[in-house]
Length: 121
Image (cartoon, rainbow, N blue to C red):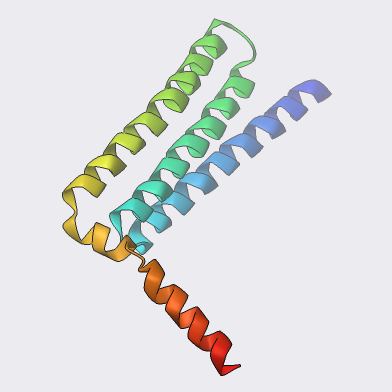
């Protein structure tokens, strides 16, 4: 009897952690302004949230054929989610013309500024 309570508490904890990750991802997607930051928040919420929710379902169901199927769903999401996120981010980088301008760093100018700061000291 005690084992069932421990199993239920662990399953409820996993479900709760998964829901927290998913809710946090919703706030991250709505809060961030740039598409790549939004995708990062969504991908983490997807991957970790689904992992913990399905892990909680596995614990509730016990170890059976159903658990094996749920484990295969986790495995599929862990393989597919990073690949799809990477492909979407590459598409965003290739199609967003302003993104490249924001990431350019003028190394010569920053080196000159550092030299001027050293001379002033």
